[in-house]
Length: 252
Image 1 (tube, rainbow, N blue to C red):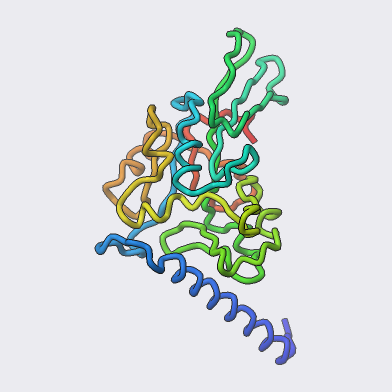
Image 2 (cartoon, rainbow, N blue to C red):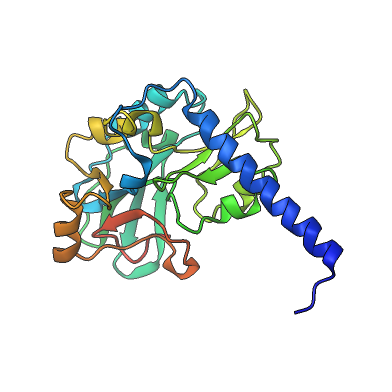
């Protein structure tokens, strides 16, 4: 395809500018952060495994995330939340889904029924390899770190909401305090220090597990060999690294 030289230079310059902004944003994210001296970004590739059968809908993960990551104190903003699915066996196409206060306070009790299946599904940023949000950000404020975590630098974010609209999982929001895009960071400030995420740390059943695909000793490798996992909306081919075990096909 023939492209006029002037257009090529303009587009190339824009790409280099955004690439440079993303790199600067990444450096800024780590500025002043206490990082493990032995931590090498190129040695890691982070994701999370969620076992739906183990989730009891207690909401401890939601509360821990809000406290750890300074999420706005409002029932409308969450970095992670839990949804309860009620699937009628006679009508699996129309599950009933609720998530009062993001599941932070648990869920009201239900009468047991042989005609429906009830289960809980934690949700958060999928930290996609080919994330739509990074593709639409006009200033490079949303970017993927070398170790596979999708981050937002509020110093560069202009609050245009493009990334919020582009996310197919509904995982982003505009922080009313800063007017910048926010979402789950996979507790990046913790994992670079050798810690797990706040939500994984407090989960009483081990339903959530942080994993590192580049670590040959990580239990995730044996798990993936022995168990099938699913991702949300696989038809979008975003390269999600949020893996679900025992995920019902009615979950959207």
